[in-house]
Image (cartoon, rainbow, N blue to C red; front, side, top):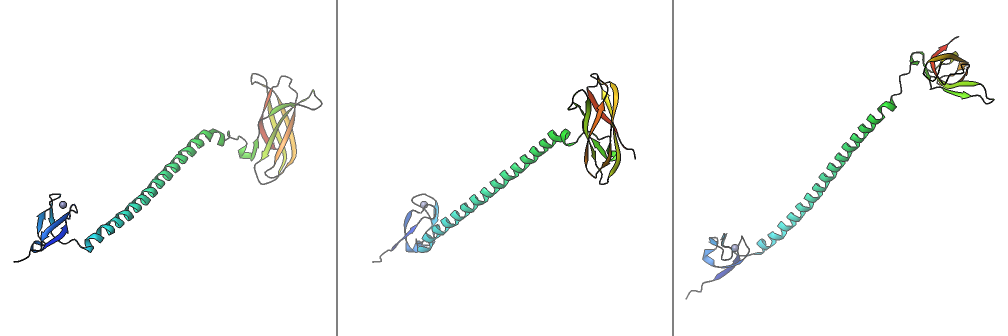
Length: 198
Ligand SMILES: [Zn+2]
């Protein structure tokens, strides 16, 4: 009597235990558990090691994916922040545009600049001066600098003139002028000319 030896294997689809006759090894049969076709072969150590390796590979790839994903997200966020700050800077530049470009300096061709002028009472009282600053925009000494002002009344009409004089204005230096105002109805003044009279 021949004893039929049954072998133990497992389904390649579901891992379920399959018992099969030795002579059917290598053949394909439908799994009794999942019904899918599977090759009949012995369940051995190589097969049981494989899932561990696969698991390790999957975890490594997952970790890499998370790492790369995190990097991409970080880069995207950084880029967006950069773009936002660019837009912010542009917006700022636009808001500041009028302030960063001072009104045209009519005295630039002669290398001077004048500040706005205010009318101030002298310390002793009774006398009014037009006070402001003249800037030497050049890197050379300026000799005999005269500033001429126009005095204006409440309507902005010219009611007189005022003058001051400085013998020497150093390179890139400023000079605070003080021009006597004799027109009693003057409420404002502006610089209309800066000249070297020497
Ligand atoms: Zn199966």
